[in-house]
Image (tube, rainbow, N blue to C red; front, side, top):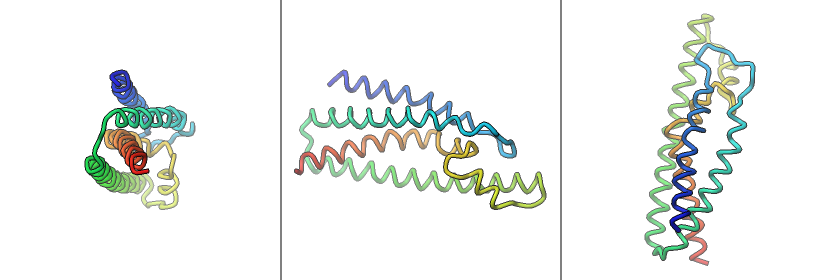
Length: 158
């Protein structure tokens, strides 16, 4: 049990520099990048860490007799945090998209909406700061706890 908690803390701490490295791979507005997005390679590591966290949290929760009411409160609180933080992240993304559009307008005299959409597509290097920041790090942690609580709840209710 103690070893699992230490592993959870260790994985959580090891994820911080990965999120920071990916965050730093973002070019400034107006700069171009022809090398693709190297942060995609680190997504695999983050996914493995996420799966390990879910497994470890599930094992920790199964070591305790947690009442169904407490599980439901935990599920509700983590769900609310996820919804609020994803909503906040969406607002931040739209603001960043406007910043890029304004920078483009300053540089070229007009806004090319298609270009702005293309550089803010799913895994463009221009949006790494939107996907890898403090908020998304906490989404990463909260999602692992949320999923573990759900698994524990369904395991106990079956």
